[in-house]
Length: 115
Length: 112
Image (cartoon, helix red, strand yellow):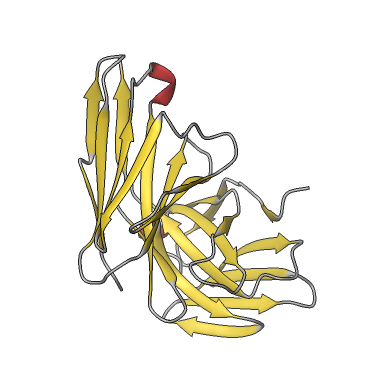
């Protein structure tokens, strides 16, 4: 299957700082990538759809100014959590569709802890 | 009512047992059905991918889709302790890079 990587795998930051998470498709190109958030023992919650060369599409209730998404190339999307607060602590996962049927492959996730 | 319903478990079975995991859904537009396995603190890993109704087998895993009943299943034969994980069903409609709709996930524990 296709490989999607994320960096960093975990990050600890102080409240009020910004954190950038990278999502890369390693062996295929992706014009679209998806960003999810997952709380302990819960399912994945879609935050936004990242579109290469255009603005991201955010799900209802997700603050655009807080979660900045940039899809700079066909293999890289970034999620920046701006002015992070403890309630932003979560597991962030990206995915990218690949192939004719656009099967979604997930990255390993990034664990964010805001102190 | 959620679009996709999945029993969260936990489901505990002895090693070697046959495991049956299920999801029901309400949106008849779903055409693609997937099962992902997620280990603790890891991203989901694609296990099975099926289109429309029917069965698909891959090693110890069998996926079934019954669109008339809006019901999908994943069977795991000869379960192993390494199968202990959360299993997420996911579905999507046709269309370019259409979004996935997930079940809540079922936690499976295979005991020695």
